[in-house]
Length: 468
Image (cartoon, rainbow, N blue to C red; front, side, top):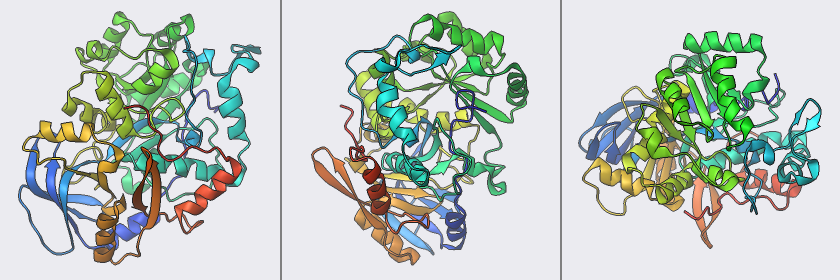
């Protein structure tokens, strides 16, 4: 199967070491203000054991195990449904003009004819060719670097997409949950669906389309499809291909970008119960416009927010949240839903994206700028925050990233060695954070970064300002 047709993601991420360690670690109790799916606890406790949330209490409740007083806002880890993370090493492109459609900038052939002349494709010269030059032994590091970019912005689950998935890649202990984690039998009940990631719906053979349609209607698969990028004839025709020619518009389908859709198309999306994945920063940089999000919201359509990729989008999902809030008048709670419960729904699970008993213990702690007394106030603080406001990221009950005080306290109470220091260029200064890096190949994240920088001296920093 080619990258144009499907499965545009890394398929060999596993975390057995993390799972085993979480099962042996003492219970974790996080105390602070808690955002539940529909409510808010001003001063409560989340209790974690064996990777799962076991209690959500409406009062401080110290007990056995690790007790962390966060003095902050505890919310679900963000779910990133659209991120070409392998390209995170490439600096942001400063585009001089916008395009009418995807193939105004992304080199492609149809019937042997180049839709975009080679000499005019910034993507070919600046991204595609240099990407192919990375040696095979560094390919895993490309994906891991993209994961770290996601992690510093609060992503605990990422659908990691790449155009050149390599089935020979070794298994990796990643920094975040990639969808392929759920191929493991331990997680089948949490995440039973298979993901089809499609870049060009017209290239899907009819026999594959029929098999996909059966899986989608049977609920055993989800389809995330790029289409309608721009306003040219090709972009407008892709929705017809999806809905009529391939019969793949279902309740388990999510449309990525979908700029070319008109009102009658959105009616079809609503009737089918399908979702849309919105990437406003990249859309506006590439095509000069984004979705009319308020019009879509009037319909019963599930909307997720994701950064696309850092080349034209945002470095992190938190930056994409800030961008959307800056450019559009969006309710903070609804915006937060787009990167938590709505995004989890796109991927076919309810076990991430919300702080609920039985869910996987993937959570964020934000420093509070003031003491919120309502869920709205807390959501407004989170959706207007920068990455420096994240003081802790917990993945499966293990602290994997955070500020020095929080990570040191967790390591000491859990009996773990200290985390590695991670210096992040941030708004003219350096943001000092700490991270756990345990893939068995490097003793520190800096070693992996040094290897990547040797291959690409102009490698992008972990964080780039998107103006939000």
